[in-house]
Image (cartoon, rainbow over all chains, first blue to last red; front, side, top):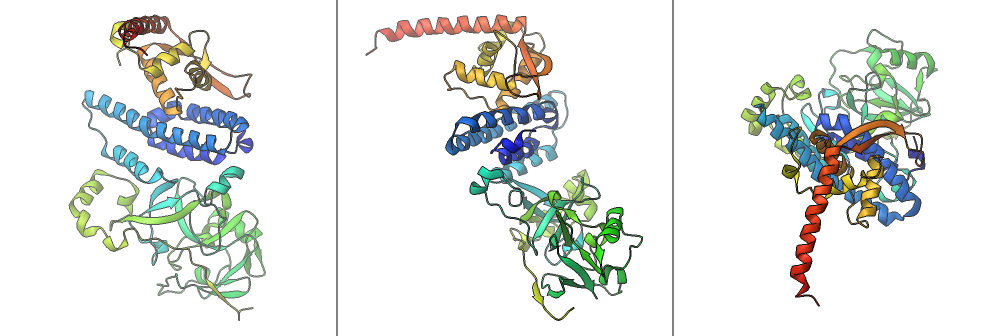
Length: 327
Length: 118
């Protein structure tokens, strides 16, 4: 890979994601070649042109992407119609959503399937994820694009380390070097007790593993979680290793988080939630996939089950207040 | 698109298709090579984006105007393997027919516009 020497590396990465707006078959056949072409062109341009030329080129590529995704989608659609197949509403809806939201900055749509962030994000919240903010755009892009590193209190969207096909949303509690433990369900970080106004406590039953972390691995601890217990616990506290993050759900008693499956590698972080564009009250299973039943359900209950008040809500990063007292 | 269309049905060629065929007239090239050559042919007026280029190539492959050659690295770039394309006999016939058609159109245009020039 030569992306290190390429100041347009960030743009090339963005393009790889934009390719998802093409029909799957087209992407499979030509996606890799298109990425390669873009890399070649960016490298040549960067060698002998200024920032303005690069930006104009980026604009041309985006325009080309807009035109040709429509063309390729239409080609697939009309070919399907000739064969008597019905067009796939989902396919078009997917492209449409990418258009609506991916053109300005790189964002990704994502739906909350679990109550682990309840209080801030509900099951059925369809959110847009800002994927640029934590992605280092390279030496050139850093001046143009908004970029910062992950901080404590950030809500982040990341690939679940035990299975990267799944995407999780949690709040960052610990950065590398932080010492973390829980006492009766309250976090103690680097010896200071946290006051976390964003959390929700709903438990009736106490659970020593969950509330007084870290004790010892239990049945629900995953292999990565066990590894954390084995290598990163010092005198009753978890110490976050370099390149890793410690994340907890806001719904502290009902959240599968770093307590159970260990640290989040920094490179698994995709971005942060930008806003809730649609909040729909539906069971978790329906939200994962657009089945026919779900389409019918949405068509019938769109107005009554949409939580209108949550539309365009912006989930906020919120640093916890640290108070002394604990050892 | 049907596999064997006779040349007249495919004419006139769109500018990208015409220039891509011209780029492949002398030698086989990979995608980026085609893109550079088309820019050279047109003095930079026609910059093919990745979507346009590969969308056209897809249709040209289906119509039998070009074919895929083997994948190999380009010594001028780096050792990454790239897919090469070459023109078929049908492609050659078509680009000739299109050039002729354009030449005819230019002749007519010159004759008609000569009177009202300057």
